[in-house]
Amino acid sequence: MSADMRTSRAKVRGLGSAKSGTEHFISQRISAIGLVFLTPFFIVPFVVALGQPWGEVISIYKSPMNAIIAALFLLAVFHHLKLGLQTVIEDYVHSPAWRTGSLLAVNLVATGLGFAAAFSVAMIAFSV
Image 1 (tube, rainbow, N blue to C red):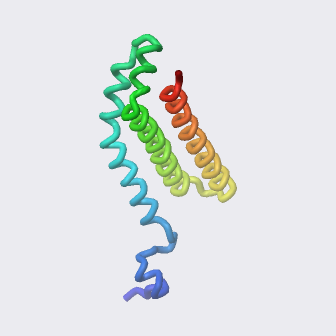
Image 2 (cartoon, helix red, strand yellow; image 1 turned 90 degrees about the vertical axis):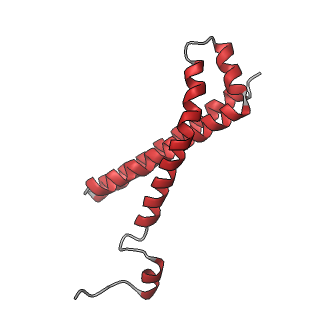
Image 3 (cartoon, rainbow, N blue to C red; image 1 turned 30 degrees about the horizontal axis):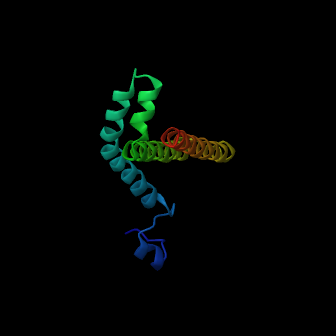
């Protein structure tokens, strides 16, 4: 018989010792499901735009639907990347200093790249 060391509140909320593992797991799965649905809608205009003159590419992504899907797809990709790398770092980097630095770097890079990608799509979509 093992003693349950969690408080009554933690038992009700279903939180383990890490306090956020379930939330992180669910967030990663939701972003993966979102990517499954967004990927075909992102890939089709992207493939059509490949090899086209710049004016054609602009006209493809001037469509609000294509621009919104591209921005959502890219933001979801970088969010999912951040969650996955965070899991790997937490599992395999054992030095507290390296873990903290790596997590900070991943958060900054993934967030920065996500915003840069969304900004790039917006610049194309709103170009004259």
